[in-house]
Each structure stands twice: as C-alpha cells, then as structure tokens.
Amino acid sequence: SKAPVTVTVTGAAGQIGYALLFRIASGVMLGPDTPVVLNLLEITPALKAAEGTAMELDDCAFPLLAGINITDDPRKAFDGANIGLLVGARPRGPGMERADLLEANGGIFKPQGAAINDVAADDIRVLVVGNPANTNALIAQSHAPDVPAERFTAMMRLDHNRAKTQVAQKLGVPVSEVTKMTIWGNHSASQYPDLFHAEVGGKPVAEQVDQAWLADTFIPTVAKRGAAIIDARGASSAASAANAAIDHINSWVLGTPAGDWVSSAVVSDGSYGIPEGLIAGVPATSTGGAWQVVQGLEIDDFSRAKIDASVKELADERDAVRSLGLI
Ligand code: NAX
Image (cartoon, rainbow, N blue to C red):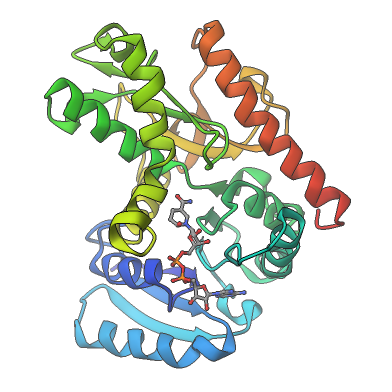
C-alpha cells in the first residue's frame, strides 16, 4: 500500500482545525488510497485541547489515519511534512493597529517558514489560511529560501466557492454549472470576484446578469460574506473555510478538471501586471502537482481597476512587513 503523506496542521485546536482534521483523516483531501499522518501544531496552552481532538480522531477509527503527533514546536511539527496547512494566526484584537497585527503574525510565520525550510520533506506544499493569509504566506515563504517559492500559496478558495454559489442562486442553476470563476488579488474586502470570465452554459456570467447586480450586489456580497457569517453565527466561518482548504489541496495535488480553473493565491510571475513575488489570487489550473496561471484572459477597464486596487493593497502589506523587518 501507499506510504502515508504527512500533513501538518497549525492551529489544530481552533475551530477551523476541528472542522478540517476529521475530513483529512477520512480521505477526502488526498483520495481514498492515501494514508495520512497528522502532525498537529498548537501553542502550549492549547495542547490539551489538541489532545482532545486527537482522542476523537482515534475514536473515528479512520482506516487511512496512520498516526497523530501533537507538539508546540514548529521544528517537530514540520519534520518530514509533505503538506502544511497554516491555519493558526493572530487575530486583530481591540485597538490593534495594522502594524501590530503584522508584527504578531510575523512572530508566528517567520519561525514556521524557517522550520519548513529546514525540516519539511522535499515536496512540501504549503497553504496559508490564517489571516492576513496572503501576507502571512509571503512572510513564511521569505524565510524558506531552500524551498521553491511556488510551494507557498494562500487561500482564495473560500471566496471562490462563495462566488460560485451566489451566481448559481442568481441564475437558478446547479453550482456545478458555474465554471471559470476567479478571485483576483487579496483575501480581504478588496478582493475582485470576476464574472467576465466566469461562465454558465458556456457564456460569460457578466452577459447574463445586469451590471448593477454585478457591481453593487454580487461583489460586496462575496467580499463581505465573512462578516455576514460572523453576524449570523456569532463566530467566523469554520466548516466552509476547512472545506475550502481541502478543495485547494485536492486541486493542487490531484489536479483541476479539463476546461475549468480555480482561484489560488500563488507567487506572482508578473502575469496580469501583478508585481513579481506578491502572493496574489489568480485563475489557476494544476497538473502534476504544480499550479499554472491561466494565461491570455482579456482584462477590461472595470476589472483592471479592481484587480489593481486589490494588488496595491498586497503591495502595501508587503512594504509594511518589509519595513518591520519581517521579510
Ligand atoms: P481559532 O481562534 O478558533 O483557532 C486558531 C488556533 O490557532 C487557536 O487554537 C490558537 O491557539 C492557534 N495558534 C495561535 N498561534 C499559533 C501558533 N503560533 N502556532 C500554532 N497554533 C497557533 O481561529 P479559526 O476560526 O480556526 O481561524 C483561524 C484563522 O483562519 C484566522 O486567522 C482566521 O482569520 C482565518 N480565516 C481565513 C479564511 C480564509 O479564507 N483565508 C477564512 C476563515 C478564517 O476567517
């Protein structure tokens, strides 16, 4: 049988971790033939809670779960890791300035990047979920000089899935009929969900909805969905975020379907005028375990302005972490 894949999950005792680990262990992320070892990284005060989650994982008797390790040491957690899901992050507290937030996250993602550099497996693939996800991914990537930069990604897939469902509900079609969705830029309120290239029935969605709905309802609904969930649930998105992380890794490792693409934040090669090195959401396919940016899409003035605004926010975040000495 196949050798187990080691999956490291940080923030494993948090609410996304709780929604994520059981599904990874069940085989939905890497497929029904791939055993997994779960390495759970937590801060010291949350180790006991992580142990509780591990007890429940044991109690599921998942046939594919080949082992669980729990630690508060990133160098143990990433030892031999093939996949890293970086979920644990420092949320913005009351009165916290942006620089404080970036600094606090630098304290998390710098050592994790360095540990990945030193002890992870050669094929390590990293998805950063913890916010600000794109910039946290940039921090980790910049501290892993021996790992190919393209192995560090950030999550746009929750926004992508949200956008697909908004379109499906608007047009009264199954979500599976919505293809070629793209979330450009930053996983933040500045993100740009693009309906000029998304298709239903082989035709651009933008031709099937009125411009006012697209600009004044659809885009803000997708961009502010996280806040709407908090308002309704009294807690931030967890199961949907975990689901999106699983989708992202599944697409990356097992490939995207022919004739479609997904949204992934990857290290920019300069495509679409996105400055090289920024980790920005783009349309992407995956084959052979590597992302390729979908090339050649025509970008009209409306989209150009939206993409540029979100990318500018990413460039500003990069400049801020650079001036703080975090990259
Ligand atoms: P929780 O607060 O429930 O869990 C976070 C966990 O991370 C805690 O158990 C904490 O002890 C742990 N942690 C903190 N610092 C750590 C460190 N240095 N090493 C290891 N573990 C550490 O948050 P949860 O709801 O699970 O959300 C986690 C992150 O995902 C947040 O940053 C959140 O903003 C982000 N999200 C990102 C999304 C995306 O689409 N990219 C959507 C959902 C979510 O909001």
